[in-house]
Image (spheres, rainbow, N blue to C red):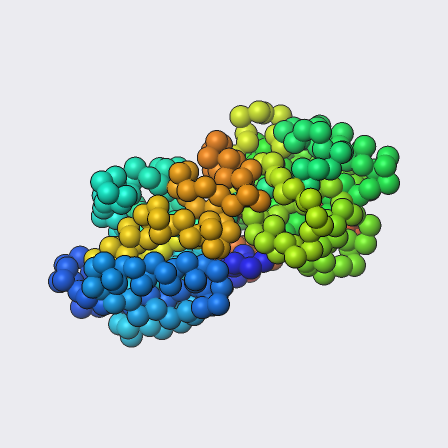
Length: 430
């Protein structure tokens, strides 16, 4: 996964405790005093050779030329937030950071350590429009609010999770919109001697997408499942139904042979070369297999099928975006840069250079992600895991579901073992 694997929350929660204990006070809340600032410090999640960094570098140079504000950027890489806590404690935090929402939330927003980004929404872009007019409200509404109820993150890249396939595959005459339609294609693929679903079973965060989506489509909630400290929520019939649907894929032999012995991302390569029909993965998938795809390959995708209710068709979104740490000495300058990067001519670099989807519907997505962009535009949005406790997801859900996905336990066993594991997890937490 080229962006950020699911957050291991224990370190983040420890940091939150430390910040709360000290108050993390600074001499400035960033609300005034820096209006004329000509410098800001930006810590980025990208390394400087990555395509996103290339797009950002161009915009940083253009921003400085236009405003005279110098951006001191440090290309920290994925572990950027590991350094942020100590910097905040010492009053030396950067003015601007970026990461995926699931990592920014516990470190900054959950305990009120992120600046209010409401002022950015009223800033001008594209010669007169406001940021609030070009970034659809649903991209902000899907994010958990900070402690003070204000927006704390401004997304600039929209990663999604959907079912990918080759548009030239004769087995997929139409994208499967319902679970029954997906199973029908799987049955036809099996009859032809072809695997239906590609997957590497060694990565619980990836296989878990199947259960998370199925539970959502059946009317359940992973957040409700994780927050029940008794484990009784696992006895909800929709949990068993979702587990049984996943079990059906395993029992019917619809998963590619050998998936239980391969390591991520081996099966991605086998999928793009025609060994399986479908692959459920994040929208980084086309970029990861680009060099392996055969001539004439057509990347297509469909949002996860519905089960019992056609209106339950929300698309997963994992936003990547900017946040301003509380106490930033140059918060206003950082706000100006965020708004500048959200101009269409700047943000387009995320599509043309980084080959990813942006939250602006008027920025054309790269060809291989046209379907993903349409899904994000045309359906409601949901967070993968619905913001369920990330440590719980790793230690309880992923561990237990992996056994089901490998065929080692039944759906009923999944319910029983999941309930016990969840109760034991929360008991150990105190």
